[in-house]
Length: 182
Ligand code: IMP
Ligand code: MG
Image (cartoon, rainbow, N blue to C red; front, side):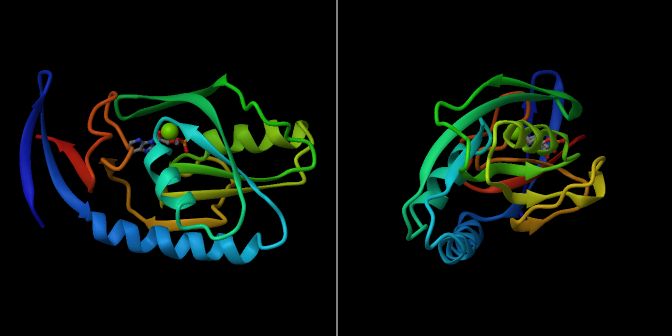
């Protein structure tokens, strides 16, 4: 495992490689294959949770071999490494009624974001809403929610890269790293 240090503001961070680009792509292909098989006869609406999901979503849809549509929601839920109450800030443009929805996110943590979105789409008449997440941190769960599609299960560590940020930074990194304050 490679380790390097960087100074972010006044906090000294240590970042350790968790998953390489290659490992991530392999997992993305596996999830895309499952979605392709499960949605052969319907056109699901994949809804990316901004902003963390954008890289995962764009890689994923290019590996799905059945017609899909995409949309986005924006949720505010993290300040630094502290989870707060999620709020819906931007809504979809597609009609949700009778649609098969797949919510796409970078990571499932406390589960509060996905719980909020599942409730919201049920209210709006979705036929079914599934959850697809690249990373899953089940030890942090505060509500009873499980992903229908997932890439990697990880312990209680804070991760950055491949769309995941720390205070808006590091989303552009192609690999996923875990970070901790030094
Ligand atoms: P939840 O509502 O607690 O499940 O929060 C999920 C959201 O929190 C994700 O969409 C991420 O934006 C953010 N999040 C949770 N854990 C991490 C992490 O380790 N790194 C970066 N963002 C995270
Ligand atoms: Mg997020």
